[in-house]
Length: 196
Image (cartoon, rainbow, N blue to C red):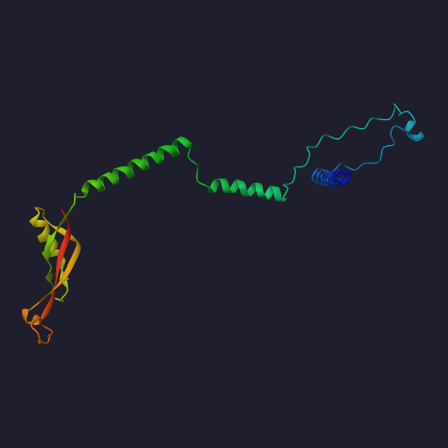
């Protein structure tokens, strides 16, 4: 416990010494003058002044010289902050900022409502409609989805699910018949479509 108190005292003394050094270095210095003798005068100084001696006129008071600008670190930082104030944009008051956010939110909600109103209601239907074969040989199921939707009373549709089946000629099922390349073909069907 005593060691702790001794350490605390050493730290306090060190901090006090550092603080006094900083304050001494930072403050203006005292003008140096001849040391005073604390009220003790030499015999030559004790003689009475001669009343006949003409009194010297005091020189006119001269204004103190203009203080030179301190070019220290703090002064330079102060200049930097003053310059940065002019470069930064002005800040809005809290009321103006809230009004701006409310306006933006209102505009976003209006745009979202307009977008939703342009969407057409869609309905999913099930059935079976054949897909046509396109020029490149791939199935074109857009026409099949349209036909499936038209049978349910809608105008057009997009295919959601398809199915494929292989359709072969009856000869393939005869025993001993060798299967040829043109004996079977794959047919695609739309089984679910999104109709509008």
